[in-house]
Amino acid sequence: MSTLRDEQGWTLERADEATIDALMAWFGNPADVTAWGGPKFRFPFTPESFREDCHWPDMATFRLCDPDRRFCGFGQFYERNGRINLARLIVEPSRRGQGIGRRLVTMLMAVGPELLPLHEFSLFVYRNNRAALECYRSLGFEIGDYPDDQILADECYYLTRPVET
Image (cartoon, rainbow, N blue to C red; front, side, top):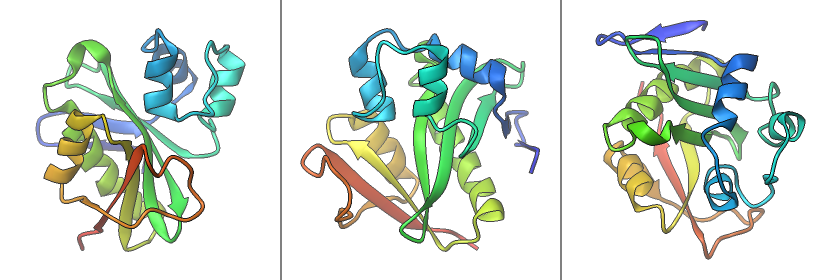
């Protein structure tokens, strides 16, 4: 899968080095970085530490572009506990609240099973991130049993949903 284009002209494509460079500008403080990348993501970061902490290019890593080709969303996925785990999902800060996160997740769910032929999706979300939680629940994700090997069980929800065939 090189590029997925939806009916409105939005594209989901593999992220490149320029994507990672642009993405770094979306984070101005440690709280934003932790909410996105988790407690082990370093801040302040360098270009090298940022790439290391987001596991570039070891994970399936994508950017979402609007019909005018502006980069406005980012996400990754990998296999975790037999599921396609969506990770590091973010919408460009000035474009939040416009349904772009929903589009990003929907498009990632369209390509995920092509690369990882599994039967369920999963993701983690901080409990205080109400907007993200509502986005994921509107897409059919439900709060599931928290994995034993994961920290932050008192701060995050673990959400799952089946892959639709």
